[in-house]
Image (cartoon, rainbow, N blue to C red; front, side, top):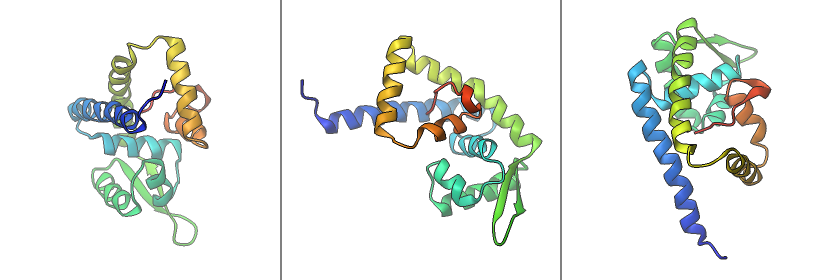
Length: 156
């Protein structure tokens, strides 16, 4: 059976787009956006990380992440501290932790709805297939979930 790769790519993008729209809608209820919440998630997973490391982890350019980090700091959600050399380290504040934790059940609900048509075995198969397409990302996804080795595998 031959599947048109352009169609397959668009289907994956459509699922991702649906996740992003639904997550943005839900997260506005707690005063944040998906981009901001995902940055908080990355900072929690990698406390003390540089802006470049966090930009990579949150799928942003260095410039976009720098602008975002400035907004998050102005909102009191993160602290930027001097590190070694020219490095600026990023850490969550208690307010940032609260926003991150308030968003977790919202994100889990969106993803549970999205993946509801798949049974456990189908989800495991999808996860395994996506891991094959993204070599080296398995550790990132676990870290980004903020749960270490207990990651729930639910990623937008």
